Length: 253
Ligand SMILES: Nc1ncnc2c1ncn2[C@@H]1O[C@H](COP(=O)(O)OP(=O)(O)OP(=O)(O)O)[C@@H](O)[C@H]1O
Ligand SMILES: [Mg+2]
Image (cartoon, rainbow, N blue to C red):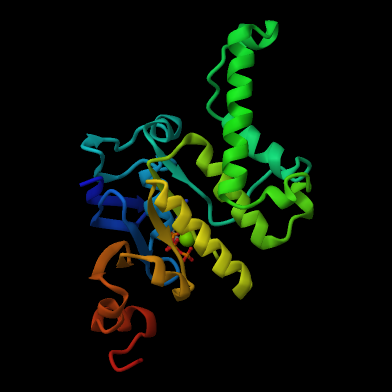
């Protein structure tokens, strides 16, 4: 299995936000992780990406145990993410925002940068080229010189996706990638996600807007931090546990 959690648990005081969660993602898949508000979806992302330490259980990525590793090490291994709230540098242009995301994981030493050695310049050129590629992949070339703060919401979300691509992820975790978008923006963002997958990037996404589920090969439903259903969107839609979790009663449609 590409990404796998085993009995993954996270307690916040007396509350188990994630409880003995068993879930897995195969390489190349787009998997949707859904569940009501407070179900533990973002916490799962924070655990996988090292922003939180598990209270129990394990996380395996490409056969390696990554539980409790630091975020930058996990990113380096190829797990990228976006955050539920779009975050970017408001005073930087779109292109600068993408370029700076490469610097989160600097590949040049301080001395190289200070003296602008040839190897530093090569890296700099390489980053600019990569940033351009991402700009095109995400389709932001038309707004590349617009300041972050002047970007419409839909574009801001796309930009955070672009920034997450800087680490060349093998798997990308998207937390509510289409939240607050217009229908047109949603269709566009979905085509971008599909394009990213076609580049060989596996995708695990959290979303309340069910429109995005047409993209997913498979859906995992969690409630109170535990998996309650898994399968195609059609399958989970008809699941009694899922209906109860979302609507609080079994006969809700
Ligand atoms: N840092 C924290 N400290 C204490 N409790 C937290 C913390 N982060 C999350 N929680 C709690 O853990 C539970 C799961 O939260 P989480 O944010 O993972 O849910 P979610 O499924 O992402 O919800 P939403 O759909 O609203 O984004 C909630 O009860 C939340 O209040
Ligand atoms: Mg969340």
